[in-house]
Image 1: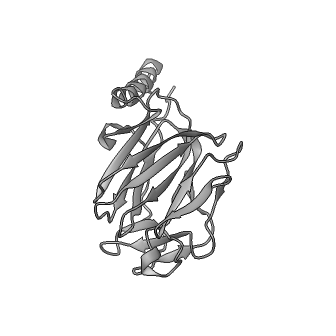
Image 2: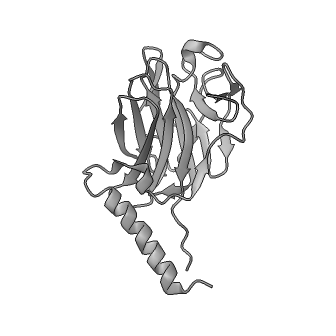
Length: 225
């Protein structure tokens, strides 16, 4: 049995890790080294049905263990920047409601770099299965429980940019961060004050070849007390 004083120490250490990672940041959510985050859960998508080429398309919200995936949240505006989705604005809430894109403009699971790796892509306005739509749609993620930090990998970047908007459970925005120039990258994000109030996020990108989401990490260490 783990003594209670040990579990309290572990919880305190986890909080200190998050605080230290975001110490130099003056925004509500900070970009941090993902290796500094003590995250306990991961969604790799590798256990989901997928295919090469355009992938296996999902016209509805995709529900996985601990998180749900769609295009945006109810109340947000969907525009375009060229052929890419551009999601803006606060969401309606509470509650925060995740919604899928129009038919052919939601999500697909695609093998990338071999059948052993599966990634999630959004489809833009040109629609599934067109190549110039693949990876150009927005991806929204809603967690089952609010998070103080998270991390993910972005695949397929060709020097473009992306933006990530973070939202609370009541629909209010915690801010938007700009990322880039992009290649094959891993990003970590942490609340600057350590608060556990990231209910979800929306990822949009403006990379010529589009982007894929992989290896979503979240979940703080459990309180063992």
